[in-house]
Length: 127
Length: 232
Image (tube, rainbow over all chains, first blue to last red; front, side, top):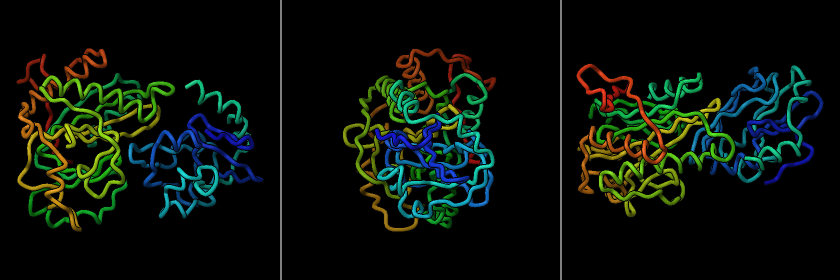
């Protein structure tokens, strides 16, 4: 499973890429593999407030519906419109074109609570 | 369906795992969580007296009324044991053991590719088949450290099926050929008998002891009450 070094990770298998006060969020390679073929993604609305560790969306695969959790708090600035017609991008390119939403962070210190790549890798290997 | 979600919420709040078995009266068509509403022919549903409900889980349209629906809510096991596939395997072992008690040899279905609008028209890895025909379809929801899995075990055919209730071309003959009911398999298909077998299967395969809770006064405390869902 790919675990890019430059990203931060949540215990619920979301990844975060930080640029300034913006956090881009998606689900990890481990998560997309466990879910199976993604057929629908429900994302928070742009402008919505999300809270760290709370559910803010859902992913339906052929096998299950699972919650997507916000790894950080803030206001949703943008969502990935491509996932409406091609939800399978979550499977094929989870860290790139399969990104889900971007948050203007209200408390960047929350990033400290996330896992780095090594810790996330350990978490998934210990499973 | 709302009662299934309530089971999940109870488990999230700390209640023990629960198994619920129920039938539908009147018949109802349940849609998957994100299935387009446009798939449904509402006029046909009204004419046939079929209520339309939406599941909290995914998948496609499924007609209830000739089936026994089961719902399991449990804390998600830690680590890999809590994965979607692992939970399906765990609960499949209970269902397979239960069906074996009825003389039915069921197996986990192979993945047969993308599904159309009708749940039972195709097989996914979460389903149970007898030979090549689907007997039981299931779906999962993972939320807040808990899992809800519910599914439909086909007991008998209704005079109509999903192809009568959805828009677009659907092949009734193909649906029938792809599915099997317990009645068609020559197995017991009376709901209480099937429910008892499913409970026994879960108890044996998962090493569980069930305590019955919502039994009405008329039911024996030793039997598991088969509830009736009204679709609301």
